[in-house]
Image (tube, rainbow, N blue to C red; front, side, top):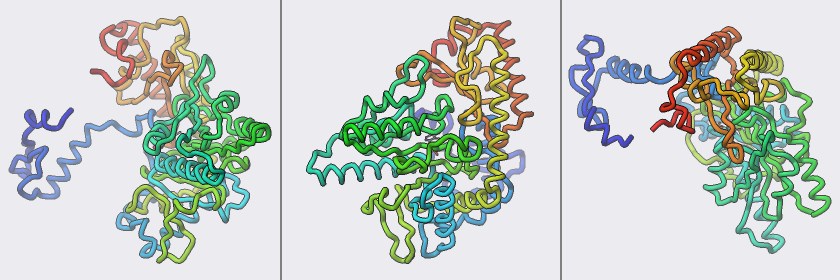
Length: 464
Ligand SMILES: *Cc1c(COP(=O)(O)O)cnc(C)c1O
């Protein structure tokens, strides 16, 4: 809603703040107030506004971390004033960032982790932009050297997260998204190869597809690209979007080969604030070797004197996320991350098993072999008297956010619902969620969902 149409209704905020007299004057909502307000009263006011937001722990839609150890809160507070970009003033922060980069390169089996390049970002979206830019720059340089045109770059992917659509639009790259067909809801080597040409800057498989939580077959795609190179001389690099999977697969799926063990994988992004267990605002982009990150994208900070390159879309940013990431890495180690990730996966698989017992549903992802959680749909031919949008709506009554959404093209007809199992969703809490889900199903048994509400709105929460 446009702010100005709201302003007519709420031109002032006439709150008493619980009878204290702290807030004796009305405060305008959309104009800078003329006078100061007592900090206690102002705090209470802002605090109360935020009460109306959802409870993040009950949000099983998000992949992002919603529970942190008290030590992380302490570090975040201590780093409030540390600007991570100022590597001259905060060289130790830069050192921690570098350690994280090398630890992740090592975790992802870099053949030479000590020489890997990388940086922290605000999340996987920024990391994806940087990864995509590096692909585009390298492709363009090769084309220029060969005296070939550089005006039609394309990027191949499966059902990607929105950040890749943004990258393609912002940086003028054609996105060749492989449509879903029938039961195939991921990219396949065959479909990738069918879209490759001399203008392909790279292929982006996702390790933990947003829609279903499954991993795309990185190794098989790489092998198909090897064959393509042998036959046609096209050398197409891979960037893996491991926003979630980067901190899952190394711990609970060691046999899935998706990382720098594959020489064609030139770069990887991950979200520190997802299964990296860091508070919001932390992502990472790592390049296999220095040569995979084009030199002219890097701004070298001269006053640092070290080899910490600056490659980012933004400048100033607090260092707390980096410090917290480093804390988590040293605090948990492989043992701790494995324990937590396995715990999350167990809860996800348990939830899938419960869903399976309700016979109106069919699992799309059973919580095994991908991101902890599960995905389901209404069994074909079944009409339980409600849609998944109705169910999502009903669960909101108890504060749960369990998203229902259509799959991307060409399976827009397939509506799925998803539960994400993160650190903080205990088996007990998941049990309470399932009880509420069963109750919601029973409710629709007695009171079939009205035709007028969610049945007709394909966009889930986007009612008019
Ligand atoms: C979450 C996610 C992103 C975007 O990451 P942010 O850290 O939210 O910017 C990109 N790709 C995938 C696969 C994701 O799951």
